[in-house]
View 1 (cartoon, helix red, strand yellow):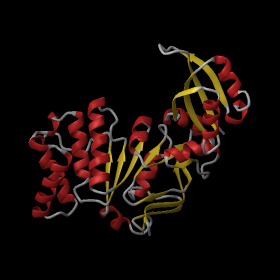
View 2: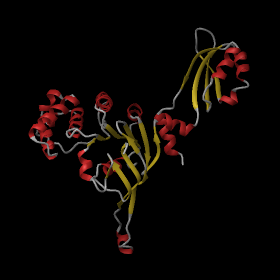
View 3: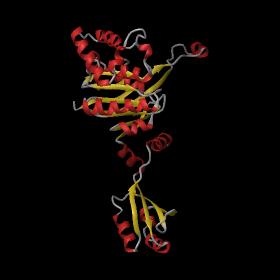
View 4: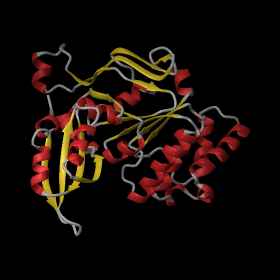
Length: 335
């Protein structure tokens, strides 16, 4: 199988507690809440794949299914070609799982002692354990901090230790669930750089990142699955998602020249190219105007040529992309 991860129609429902009236009137009727419904995604080997959505979208539930911590009610999921329903042990040997709120470390032990404990749980021998701990300490940049007591760790150090633990078995696939939540901006940036440059670019690991941080997803991910209320709304690269949502490209032009000539040049092309403006902008070198162009055309060269024929000097021309945050809001709100 060419994909590191593939899901086909994955659906997950959880039983919901009944009230006293429901227990009396319909004791045998099951009451359920659907956390995931008909999830179909494919993650390529060596890519950083983002699960983006608000709280309650189903990101963590999907990761837990892929880590074989829970099983789906319907559909099939494959990790490294292994079915999560049948090959849980093989899958767990090839994956690492890092959560944001780490409560399972022993606070009175050092970072190294914690890693030794979890290495033993993962059936690593003492020589393997020492070698692998040295490798993950170097990889995560913990350095001398590895021999400090865990209770004295900062939030960033705890998160690095959690990532180090997830890497103990040298997994091919790493699942990160909100890895920068509750971290200050500088430490969060360090963690993001480590994920992108060390884990993906250098180590060539497949990383699945669950987040509701738009900036994080936009900067890190090769492709994104936008989730809401248990459904995948769209799944592709950010540029492809923009094209699917808008079907058009937005350009900004800054031009100078006489207003009359500019109006004449634009008169026949405003509708064709969806031009908004001109809007006057402050300039010390003569009249400067801003134009916004929204078009489905592959090129705006004819528009630029028309402006030049009318002695309109084009100072700047560049595409302007809608931020992921704005795009996400539109996708979630639309029916």
